[in-house]
Image (tube, rainbow, N blue to C red; front, side):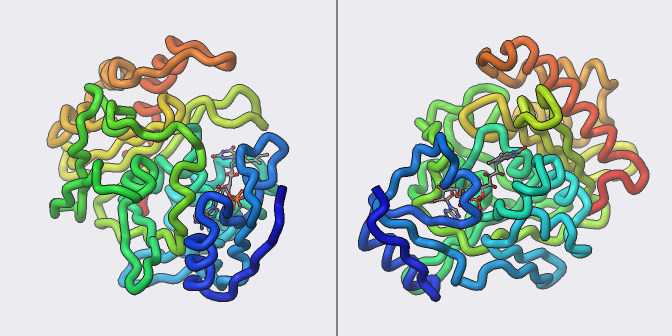
Length: 317
Ligand SMILES: Cc1cc2nc3c(=O)[nH]c(=O)nc-3n(C[C@H](O)[C@H](O)[C@H](O)COP(=O)(O)OP(=O)(O)OC[C@H]3O[C@@H](n4cnc5c(N)ncnc54)[C@H](O)[C@@H]3O)c2cc1C
């Protein structure tokens, strides 16, 4: 039963409250999941984030700094939002939900079928996590795989021609980064113990393009599968591709073996690419879709996202 509703005015106060009440307290942003009828969150203390003034969007050094409390609809409507990010956020149904739901709440909830997390990964986005003295930044991929609480799945950051790329160094199942044997939590709120204050989407190289796609059972249903890809185009070859897929594991995964196979070569014909991607994913059957169906669709949607990204002006950031 909820005993107290706290409305801190500063990030430090929010952190102190969380430290004080630990697992008996939970952060509250837009409330679309936290307040849902079937929510698994039953805290004694709600810590509302509404007073933290974290809903701004700013441009800094060409990158987008998005306050965690920014509603998804505002992100879509902001002219500074890169087109591929706008497209991914717009996949989330419906406008009513997008008006309430915040980007920080979305990432913290870490839903396996998220329509937005794959694109944040494809754009190499980071989350800002405040600490006692300094805030630290971790990649969205790290946050969703570890909750950013341990260094067990640290990623090696290396400079590339297109900017910065990350590679997972954990022991992974072949074909993906993070649906691996590293014991990641399947709880949709696994990351939510650490307060997210901002999401940072870095400026991307001029030749870097990205696109997304999804498959849903019906217009109002959640995605069965959601996909985002990004790549750098040089002459006829693609470089440093990122392929992020939701709906095939306990959280969004990166298909690193496919990324490596595609790097530095022309994009293969659609059928070949689709077959390669289908081989990389290991979904399980659910009441909504069989594993075979999701595997097939993963190939089709990823290849179509690549085509979309490569269209003239198709996937510019
Ligand atoms: C009807 C409905 C339809 C939906 N459709 C889609 C869809 O089509 N596609 C899709 O991808 N998603 C969909 N969603 C999910 C939706 O995007 C998320 O519910 C939403 O983004 C969560 O954000 P929120 O601000 O409401 O978070 P809340 O519900 O307030 O919180 C969610 C979780 O995150 C924690 N939290 C919140 N903010 C922070 C923070 N800043 N730092 C750390 N922890 C935090 C909370 O403690 C809680 O555990 C749907 C949800 C609903 C209810």
